[in-house]
Length: 220
Image (cartoon, rainbow, N blue to C red; front, top):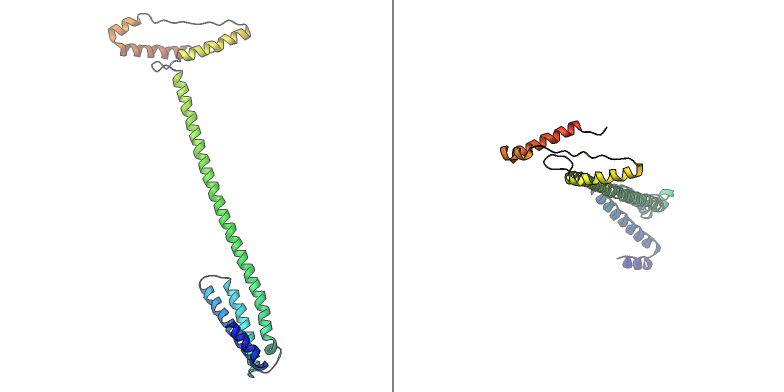
């Protein structure tokens, strides 16, 4: 279509080719105006600038065409209306492009901020889970360590703990050149208690004795 119009413009005389060019520009402005209105109605706000730009071309071409077709007299507005329209269109389209770039940049920044926030929240959540797991593991290890050094019946320190303390105190005495003492206790007639009252009573007896030892034996 553009090729045919170009040939017609070349073949026609000056007045006719000018009128044809004005008609084509008028059609261009009309189509651009329709496209801008449809885009604006779809919710794209910067399309309002597109509407203004093509409206200026439409008005400028209308004034020029009215002059060339003899409807309006010749003056600065009817003679250069189309040029003014194209100039203002270029400025407005540049502003629309800048607005579009700004919108895209803002959307990109929003998307990056949302992604960064989401990642930070996931990292914080994961870190919290890891810390809770470590705390639980530390607590479990502490309980296991305590259970491995404690007698299950009397809740007194067992032979393993005794060996550790004895080794540590022995090295301390060697360094400080001090003596250490060891108290050994025995429960008289404990076998008779087991034989007469049963092992459950014997276990209860051991617990009572261990409780009494905890209450009266302490480190000064």
